[in-house]
Length: 136
Figure 1 (cartoon, one colour):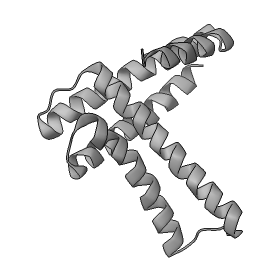
Figure 2: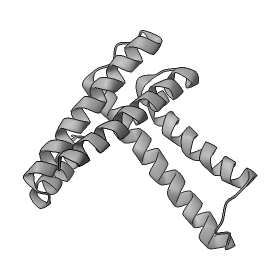
Figure 3: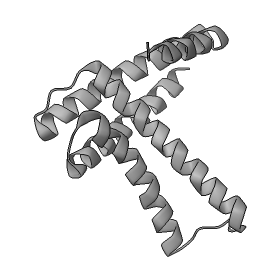
């Protein structure tokens, strides 16, 4: 039952996006979840399914969005618009920890292993995005 919003969001995206973009997005999601699965197995020896890897990716994105809205709310409430020096580093660490927390909770890994999986999957997804963008 909890998969219905994801199916609805995919169908909405498939109807409004061109076919080439939809296929590239599906291929990229499949490849990134495969990278997450293999990285999890290599780093911690834990086998994860495609569903767990996709859940980790989605939950990490969700936590980053929550951290962004919390920072936006803080910025709007206090009037502080620039984060430099120590404050900039703290914002970066907050975003990184929120991203890693999604992998930690979904895959059940320790914080260090979750960080390694998050970094490798981010590098892989960025490389894939650049590769697919050059094809379009």
